[in-house]
Length: 139
Image (cartoon, rainbow, N blue to C red; front, top):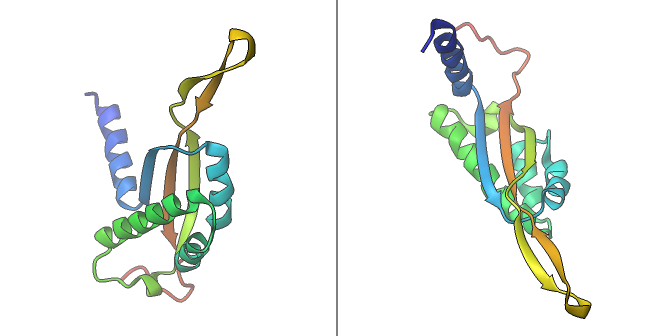
């Protein structure tokens, strides 16, 4: 591995230590339905987002609630001894990308068949904490 490639890999690893995220792969709902729910919680404080997801009637909200709890657990693993209430955690952004689509056939009139695409998606949720204005970072 070249020096330039090694340096960029080290920078990426350092940036990953400061990033708090959780990823959900191959979720069997369409990306469009998932984006409807992620739009509700993007940019909102974590406890409020959990309440929104808990009381939402859509199926995708159950999966996102579990993903948000996983992202919070990842944050706690990197910040031991810090309380969530004091850190002002919020959902920074949520990405929904298309996943694998299973292709199925449905019978149609006159001996034909229609193709059905059962879509799936990948969801990436990133958390961040709001810095208080009076907070001193150089301790």
